[in-house]
Length: 255
Image (tube, rainbow, N blue to C red; front, side, top):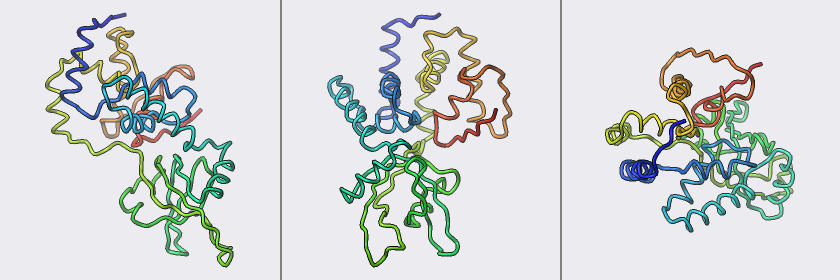
């Protein structure tokens, strides 16, 4: 085990704030909220980035509580889908966090959304969304969706549910030149630790060789047509990074 001195850790945090201001998410907060919330890490980090970007501990704590409330009120668990739909009907408007897939209905020449956890299908969606976010058409992405409910008796064959606004939860555009410029401020060892922390690992508890083995899992994320085989028992973290770190990776489970 390698212990990182408090002064060195504080210096590293200061560098991060200077080089990547507004792009830093505290992983301890992610872990704190992740327990009990069955959502991908990048969904939590999106919310934490919105509400916990301050350096003030009181503001951070208030932000954490806000994120917890948002997840409790808006994240759709499959076993509570009917409860959410009932609340949508009663309130006429409701915001949900769910994985959305869009399909083109060729017969009707319209786009239709499918909600993974909510169980809704064939919900009309404006064509501007799949045009702007094409990953909706290929596997789907997690989104924050504002729904409306307006039952019209004369149109009983249609759905009373419509999408008012859809906001994808995904990695923002990365300015690689800015990213590379910030990298120059860090040593190789510091950068390795940052990569591991970004994937949810605590480098101070890892031996140097283990760090490199964990980094090797990231190779398919940066190299095209890279084949990697890792043997090991179930639940040892082999597929964790591909499922949790990015909405741009798709994990197909085997076994």
